[in-house]
Image (cartoon, rainbow, N blue to C red):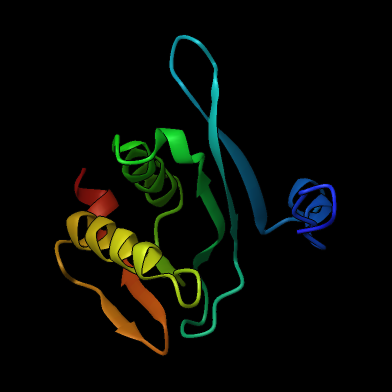
Amino acid sequence: MNEDALFEYPWFENYFTEEGRDACFIRERGTGRLLGFVMINTYVRKWDSGHSIAEFMILPKFRRNKIGRKAAFACFERYPGNWEVSPSYGSEQAYLFWKHVIHEYAGKNDQYEDGIFLFSNYDLTRER
């Protein structure tokens, strides 16, 4: 975070210009009020191919209302296949959020190794 309280992200522009990257605002239905954002890319460490949550943030005053869960599920549904999610290093809250969301979504068919949740939703999205 810089002195103006802005988070500088060196790859921000790339999410709007490069294939394999996607950025989405999370907005409230009806009002369009901004609730957060998510950035997804195809940089994965444990799979040959797949998607990864690069950044995920729900504004603090909107947390604990299942908004993050709904947004995560929408991301998983949008991109069938292998997924890697790395909770913010050292954040127990982020770890617990992702553990709960991924277990609920993947039916506990996930792994956690080297700080990364791994799962595939290929069969899950075909069944829905």
